[in-house]
Image (cartoon, rainbow, N blue to C red; front, side, top):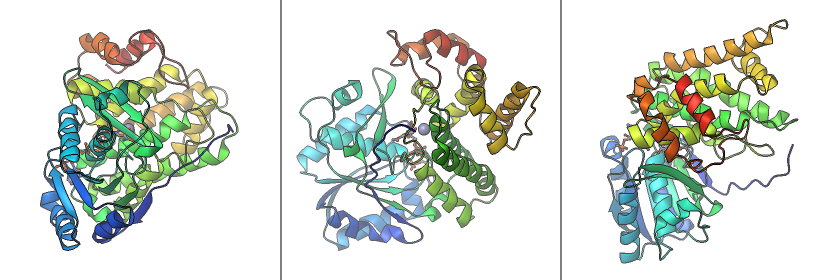
Length: 389
Ligand code: NZQ
Ligand code: ZN
């Protein structure tokens, strides 16, 4: 196990009715002038918007609003949010929704404390200051409620890039699984795939002797494999929704990733798919991940055998271990298909002719590599995308 620091300062409030705590939490973490950031309307339908805004008003907390965040959040709304923060002397940002609203809030939080263009932080400028943020989560997926990361699509550059800092970790996150019961099956499945992939990016590591984090990863994999079909079949099953929601947080606040090298190649590749085709992030991952596995599986066979046997329940074939590996990947791919995820480029409207453009948009465009389990150059990424065709 490698040396590590683990810093996860977010206060989590989990369960039914916890959204009522928002005004008290904002005050506790020093907010008095709030920017409320949300998406396209799901929170208005569910009544969450009314609960939050009434709570702010009755507690005398000033707020400005920025609604309309779209999935795969764009730079335009971030610029708008930064302006509002500066104009209205905002001291706290509250994101209500999913990863897109939370990531927009994080990008605004950095931009509000900076005189230059917020996009600089996505191109390497170190993050030294940010407004505090809180979140009320309505979809189990991105894990942004517990992470220090944000991913934004630059509209004119058509690039979807990420950045991160502990300064971006939410001060608090409120998680009421009841609010995830209104999610359509496709969004539930996309979110579940993202959660599973946040575990994979950490699990597929060459670092040896990481038994505790491997076992934590496996507990989360098994939970997601059990609970996702239940939530899709019976959207109002509170217990399934609750287990998925907490798994989503644990999958990405890095409790499973400490002390080991992490991969992240599938995410880097997928981000450019969602930038170009506006596909849901989880659905893009369902296309990339099986192809990535097939391409790299021979490089560290032990880890893939462990995945096949411990996660997918395959019988170990001692004479032909490669058959066990392939069976594990097949079971994973079939699971994704069974929950309604696409697993080919064509299924998300992508075209093999676009592969050079996808690779050009990645941060490896000018040489360099992505991923750690196996370091991938342009040719490798091209080959993976062709396998996904
Ligand atoms: O906009 P509204 O109307 O709220 O609708 C949303 C949106 O259409 C809908 N939705 C959310 N909660 C709902 C609901 N519909 C019905 N009932 C509810 N309770 O779901 C759609 C997707 O919302 P979005 O916020 O985009 O989902 P998600 O949480 O999957 O976030 C995806 C974004 O997070 C980024 C992804 O790249 C993507 O841009 N990620 C962020 C990470 C991070 N910050 O750490 C890590 C991840 O790997 C990921 O890259
Ligand atoms: Zn993700």
